[in-house]
Image (tube, rainbow, N blue to C red; front, side, top):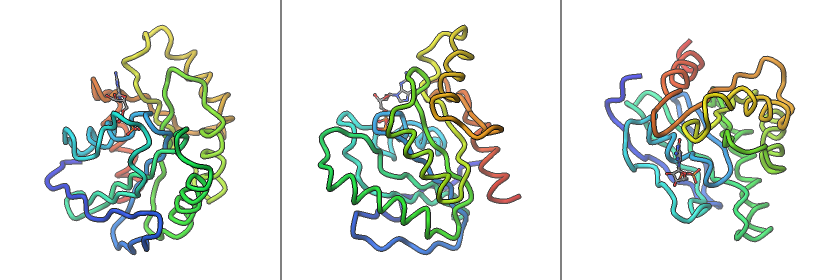
Length: 195
Ligand code: GDP
């Protein structure tokens, strides 16, 4: 993907109406601090358009980034932030569910998991939820630069088993630092969006 133009076009809060877009969308989910903003910035070749949080979990909105007037990257709110009330978590869960359920233009869902850690209960819930909405998410294993090469296959096994991934599920290791994995993510997304 050659990035010519990027704009944060729509920001949806908890009570906002979701936009009805006529261009393909790809969405990103993951718990707060997993590296979602860093990934989205790397995909857009921007340093800081998507906020990189010092305080994880602050960005409780669904953000739609228009790329080249051709498609949207959709940044879903990070889950699992301890300081958010149960009520708020539930409301956000419903909002994400509503988006996954409603969007007619959603072509791929990416779920981000930190490559260093075993998937959490929330990660599993999100994975099952995405499946339940009829999508088979691609897993992006983030912060690849933080592990040794020799640990990679073991960590990928922990991830596959921890999420109980449907066989054949694609897992793409990614580092925002080295940008390893960026091209593979774009390639997959473009194939899904434009055939
Ligand atoms: P978000 O809450 O999921 O949007 O996560 P952020 O993108 O804000 O990242 C959380 C923290 O992890 C920040 O301090 C980032 O600099 C750091 N981080 C994110 N991705 C990577 C990565 O690939 N490698 C390393 N070393 N740090 C990362």
